[in-house]
Length: 271
Ligand SMILES: [Zn+2]
Figure 1 (cartoon, rainbow, N blue to C red):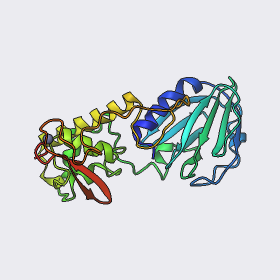
Figure 2 (figure 1 turned 135 degrees about the vertical axis):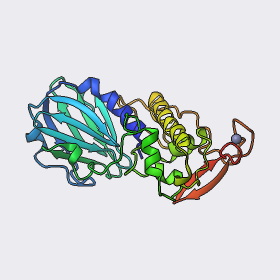
Figure 3 (figure 1 turned 90 degrees about the horizontal axis):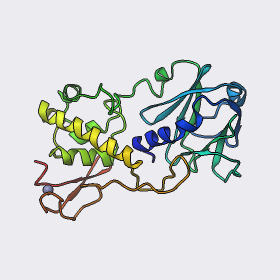
Figure 4 (figure 1 turned 90 degrees about the vertical axis):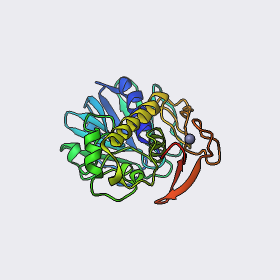
């Protein structure tokens, strides 16, 4: 499943090719994605110039003067920018063709992705309106996280993975950020001090920024926006390292399950 860093990498990868370009045609080969692709998309977008691409959580927002295209990559979606005509393959469900000859191609074998259109503020769309703060923006501060943890007995790992509190902190990033913060994943959220909350916020930002820098980390194949395969996984300090020695203290990394997700930690470093 594409994660926030991959969606951000995709945004940064496709933006320079498409910005200010005018749509000439939209080809929808498979309208049955997670929700139906709007039938009139080609009519709506023809002659419209793309004004900006922003990201909210794992949604990409393609802004036109007449409205906004909301894209989600679901479980297996990929966006590619093609500079010349390439015959579509099986799961290439939608092409947006621009006047400069560039094609934005949406591929999604499992079809849990989404292509939606809104003429209203996309941030108020039902899918987006209840999302928590963006982890890399100024709203995600130590005082915000500290406030959110008050009165909550839930494990801190589960709290930081709750998209209603902060978006985009997937399992890998939660494990890594807790390790860097010397916090046990099972710690009740309300036991964190303000200082610990501050360290955790800083380390969540750090691991996400690192992942964006190396182009996103994933356990499955991922094509970058220009179609070249292969992002290098960033060096993970605990995730997936059960039984291996901790890089700091040589203690063997432990693994447990929390809410169906694997948790990795060093019992010595995270006390
Ligand atoms: Zn250790």
